[in-house]
Each structure stands twice: as structure tokens, then as C-alpha cells.
Length: 557
Image 1 (tube, one colour):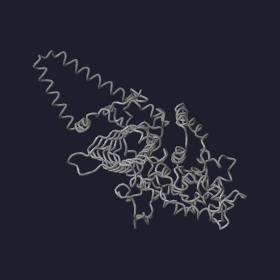
Image 2 (cartoon, rainbow, N blue to C red; image 1 turned 45 degrees about the vertical axis):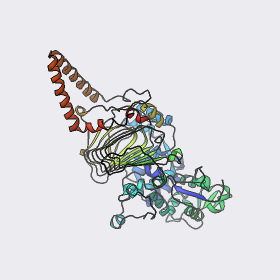
Image 3 (cartoon, helix red, strand yellow; image 1 turned 90 degrees about the horizontal axis):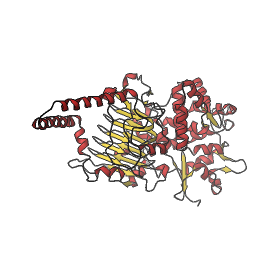
Image 4 (cartoon, rainbow, N blue to C red; image 1 turned 120 degrees about the horizontal axis):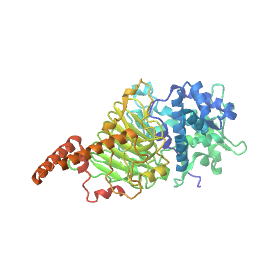
């Protein structure tokens, strides 16, 4: 490592995937988190520090913070899902849960889980990203963006708290504005004053800086290799700047803070960098007579695997189908798409769909979070670790998920339905992302919002309205049926419909029509079918599949 030019930045993933798009519980304020920070250290022998066990967090969250147990588990599980785990470990956990016969057995298994205590405290603190402040609502954004912001304000606009999850300026400003608080949260209690503040002589432990690597990473001299924060801070030539003492094996609080502030810069793999200098992709063809231009950008040609990003906007009246290495493990944002059919058939890291209307999204397995915000009349078909929705109207979700779907604020007429499609590589992609077919909580959503949300906001699709979905592309692979099958009520409805078709065919056969009558009858049926295609909007979907000539193979490109 060449010591000149250390560049640090705030990681995107903890904010994109980890910050729940809802104002945090009031008890996640700094005041309470400081109390928890002190409390866990006094309970080190009881599974609180350096790793926090679920049973201890449940005791703190439910007993001391008065949170509902479901909410306590939700935050614990979201953080745990961010941890680096192999797909095999994730599948093993799914198998353990699917073998549990009761809530008590599930609780016993959960009690074996633990997370890094200090990183979990930081994770709870960054939930403040989506805190609604009175000041902001009166005078606008708390954190003004630099003037030379991305050239595409449409994609990074910050009119609501929602865009903060994808806006790297918000991530950087949040960490810089609250850096002292974040560091104080990690201090050993004896390094704090009675009012929980640091002094000029406060020392930061090595463990605390390791924990801060949850949020910060960097490079030296703009080299390709990315290091977690602690590796750079502990690098011998940087000890003078980072404030590390080899004798006490600790950092000087004020030197470390000054060094962090001096080195923090924009995320080279963030959304704004992706939009500004990312590769523009011509996946969507310009449609004749439309003025809107589809914009698709990615950073996969420069970004390491954990930092991949694809942003697509303004796809209008088109069918877009992709299964490519560009998408594998990427964070995907789909923004302002209208009257389109979008198939992204690769294993994905996270997906955010925002401000889209009258469109269908068929996704490969989403390893972490699938989030929808401000969408109308959208259909989403996906296997995902977690689904969360806010401000949606008339949307339908055909999902397979091992966690309860989260209904955040502002939703109307939500429909949940079983996952009902397959493509040849689906099971292979599920294995790569660590997603299994059981447990599947598609039909057991959890309402998480401050306003009084009653359960009438959602419904489960009645079996009589259920049809399977066919993905109209040829691909290599072994999956030939819906993973995990269908719930029996829906399977039965399909069977009854199949029976009706057979009766109809038999009736036609037994009618013994003449050749001319058969021709006439066929014309009548075809006209009715054509009428139905137009009335349901399926005509556009079929037409959009015809060009280009290699249309059936375009998913593989």
C-alpha cells in the first residue's frame, strides 16, 4: 500500500438494504442507544457482548424499549441478513425453520442466533436516515447536495425521505453529520462522561473501529483493492494520522475523528457515480412515436462484485428481457417505468421499484430486499428474501419469501398471491442466492406503520382469479415447474378450469358440425379471443414480444 491519498467512503448497501423505509421507533434515538451500549457491556456473560444473542436483544427491545416482539425480530433479522454468509448457510437455516412444528420451536432456534453487538448498534442508529423531522418538512432537505450532483436529477431527486436509501450524498452527509455520535456509541463506558460524551482524552478500542467498517471502507491511491476501514486505520504508516497507539492498542478519539473527516469522500460505486460515469446500456429499444427515452446505466465494468449497481428509468410501452452477468449480484433500481413488461432473470442482490405504473416485473431471486414505493397497478413476480412496500395502489405480488412481507405506510388495495411461474435457471439461481421454497410467508404480511393500518389494506388473491404465468423465452436450464408447487386451493382452481376446457372440447366434438360450420365457429371463437386480448391489454404484451427476429432468445443476451 502506498500511504499517499487514503480515500474513504460510506458504503451503500447498509443504507439501500439495511435502513427500513419507515420512520424508526422513537426508542431508537441516540439517548436510548447509548443506554443500550452501556447495558450490553455489563451483561457480557449473558450473551450481550461482543455478540448479542436474540434472547438478550428480545429482553432489551421488549422489556426496556417496549417494542413488540415482531418488530424486535424484524430489525434483528434485517441486520442478520446483511451478514456475509454462504448460500449453503442460508439454505440450512431455512431447512431448520421449515422443520419447526410450533412457534416455541422457532423461538428455540432463534435463540441460537447472535450478531456483532457494536455493528448492530450502528445499524439501529442508521434507521434515523428515514426519520421524519419537522424542520425538514417545513424548510426542505436537511442535507443540501453538492452543486455538481448527477446530471440526471430525475433519478436522484430527494423530494421524499424515500430517495435517501439510494442517494449516496445522503449516506455521506448522514455519517459526517453524526460521526461524533456514531463514535461515542462505540466507546467503552469508562471513556465517556456522566452525560455519555467523549472527552479530549477518550480512547477508541480496536473493536470499535472494526465495527465502523460496517459503514466505511476505502482505498489507497485510488487503487482497485478495497479495504475495510479498520485495515486502513491499523496500517502502520497511517498510525500517526489515524491516532492508533501500538502501546495501548487503542485510537485517540479526536485524532481518529479528524482523520475520518479528512479522508471521507464520495462513494465511487454509488448511485451518482453510476449515473454520471457508468456504462449506458441499450437494453430498451426506442419505441416509435414516444418522446420518452429509456435510460439504463450500470457500473459493473468497474465495480467489484459486492458493489454492482444497475439503474433503469423511463422504460415505456416495451418488453425488456435480460439474463446476463451484468445483473448477477447487482443492486437494481427501476424508476418511472410505464406500461412495460420487464424480465430480469438473473440472481439479484436487491431491487427497488419506484414510481412505476401499469407494468409487470418478473425478477430472478432477490438475495436481500425487494422494495416498492409509490407504484400504481404494478404486478411483481419474484422469489425474494424480503418484500416491503410503501405508498402503492392496486399492486399485486406473486411471491415466494422466507420472511413476512412488510406493509409500510400509504398502501391501498394490495393483493398477495402465490409465486406462479418458472424459467429454466430458476432453481439454480435460488441455490446461488440461498433461497429455499420453505418456509414461505407470502400470505402472512406484517403491517409496520405509525398510522393506524388495519388489515383491510390487503387481500389474498381468490383462487378463482388465479392463473399461472408463462415466461415466453427460451433459455438453458433444468427447472420445468414452479418451485415448491402451488398451495392446494390454487392447484384445485387450476384443475377445475382444466376440466371445463376438456368438457368444452368434448361438447364441440359431439356437436358433429359440418366443415363450413366448423370454419364459421372457429372465426367466432377467434374474434371473441381477439376482443378479449384487446380488452385485457394482453394484445400489447404479445405484440411487444414479436420484434426483433431473435425475440425468443433475447433473454440470454
